[in-house]
Length: 59
Image (cartoon, rainbow, N blue to C red):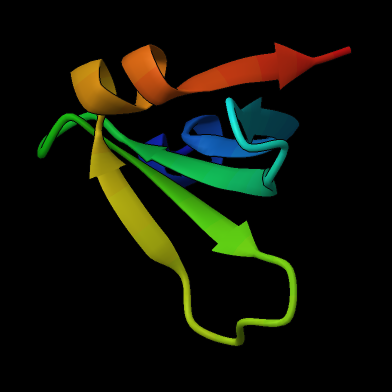
């Protein structure tokens, strides 16, 4: 399995405002989370530490 596949994710998180994001990948090299916002075609990213502070996982 290559490193690219290991970093693929399919998880959902929400912030304190209730905005839900779909986390699709984790970039180990740059230590950032890549996610999609509903209604947005382009992926967004946040540093891991900031993402952890702002979002809670939905199970």
